[in-house]
Length: 202
Image 1: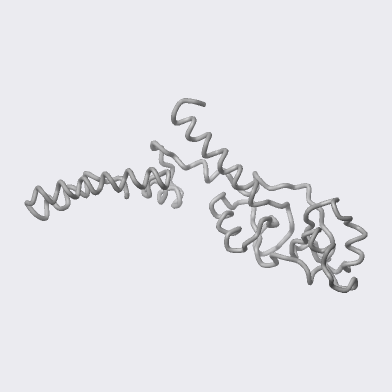
Image 2: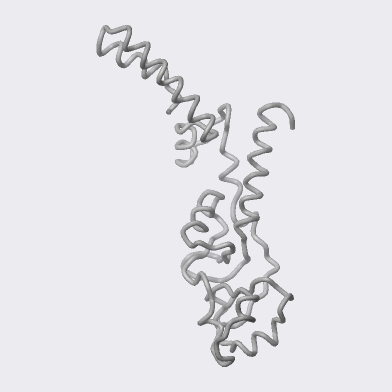
């Protein structure tokens, strides 16, 4: 699993003179390495080194994942609205079809939540209800420095299809928006590019 078949072979050979056991361990190590490579895409050792910040130039280098950040993928052309706005006023200001989602902010432009336009237009609540009560993903945000892996994990935990990008976790100043669909498309594109470069097709 950690791309060390010779190491795993020498360990039982030094511990016991059983050559048969050594051959079995070697075969198991090779099969394990091949299985991990085919199913996971990279060896676990290369993956762990990159998570620790090391740059490993191997057959499948995944260092590009660190440069594929939320800041480089987010949309900056977002629409915001004050969270104190009533539902009736929201429907007038944001007609159905004019946008898919709007970011609710407070008076200091700090993030409050995501408003799904179609859902608010079909919501049976009283028109005087503030939109902050209908906002989603209030506690789930992204920051520009997050890489693609950390962002994907945040999407999974929140069960969200779109999340706001804020300046930092302390001061939730909204910078943009990122959808899970765009995140996965960019990840797939970069993964395909890395594999083409490796095979010489690029």
